[in-house]
Amino acid sequence: MNTTQCKLAAAAALTLAALFGASGSSQAQSFTDIKQVNAGELDVGYVEQGPANGPVVILLHGWPYDINSYVDVVPKLTAQGYRVIVPHLRGYGSTRFLEPHTPRNGEPAALAVDVIALMDALKIEKATLAGYDWGARTANIVAALWPQRVTGLVSVSGYLIGSQEAGKQPLPPAAELQWWYQFYFATERGRIGYEKNHHDFAKLIWKLASPQWNFDDATYARSAVSLENPDHAAVTVSNYRWRLGLEQGEAKYQALEAKLATFPNIGVPTITMEGDANGAPHPEPAAYAKRFTGKYKHQLITGGIGHNLPQEAPDAFAKAVIEVGRL
Image 1: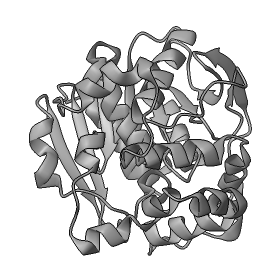
Image 2: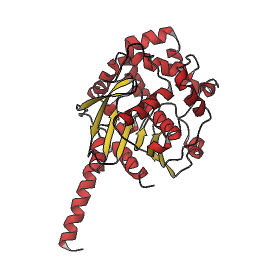
Image 3: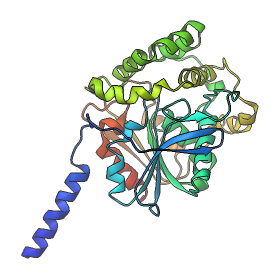
Image 4: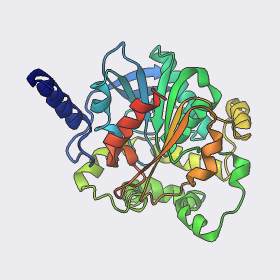
C-alpha cells in the first residue's frame, strides 16, 4: 500500500469510527427541530433530517419513551445519505388530535394507519421502518398489511402482531407478573393513577425494562416532557385495555384487526434484534422467526442492552437499518 492509499484508508477508518464507534447512548442531546404536518386524524410532530432525495427511513418509538430514543441513531443514518423521519406517536410530544371528539384510541391498527397517513402527507411512497416496543409492533403491522410501502423492516423483539383473542389466553405466572401494568391500567384506579403519576411511573418502567442502562436524570427528563401530551394517558390506557379485550376499539379498524388476528407473515427484508438484558416482556427469537418469510436475520446485541435498544446501542441499531437495505 503506497502513502496515498494509507492516508485514504486512515481517513475512512476515522469516518467509520466517528459514525459507529460509540456503543453507549447520548447523555446530552435531544431533538429541537420539530416540524408539524396534518396527517389523517392528527397534527403530527416529527423530526426530519438528511437529504430530501435520500432513501427514507421512518423510526418509531415505544411506550413510555419518545423520539429522543433515536437522537444518536439519526446522525449515523443521515451521514450515509438517508432521509430520516422520526414522528411522535399519537399521545406523545407535539402530536395532537385535530378534532376534540376523536376517540383517543390506542389500538394497534390505529397507530399503523397513522404511519400510512404520515407517509401520504409527506408524499413518501416507500420507506424502511424501524422500531421497538409500540414502534416495532406498528412497523410490523404496516409491513404485514401494506408491504408495497415498506422497503425493509428492523424490529426489536421480533414479530409483535397480536389480537384480542390471543390476549385472552392466560400466561404462566412469571410472565403474567411482567405485565403488571397492563392489569393496573384495566382498573379505574390505574387510569387515574397513571394520569396523576405518569412521570414517576414511566421512569420505573425504564428501569425495569433496561436494568443495566444507567441513564441519568437529564436523559430521562428530556423524554418525559413528551408524556405531558394531554392525550398521553388516554391513549396508553386505551392500548392496554384493548389488548385485554376490555375496549372494543373503533369499527373502522375492525377489518384490519381481523387480518392481524390471523397473524400474517411478513415478507419484506427484515432484521430482528434483541438486547441481552431486556427486562420487558418479549418472545424468544425461535418463536417468531418463521413469521418472516423474506430475507431475514436476527441479531443479539450484547453488553447489558435493555428494552430501549436504539438509545442504548445506537451504533448497532443504525447498522441494522443500513444492512436491511442490502439483504
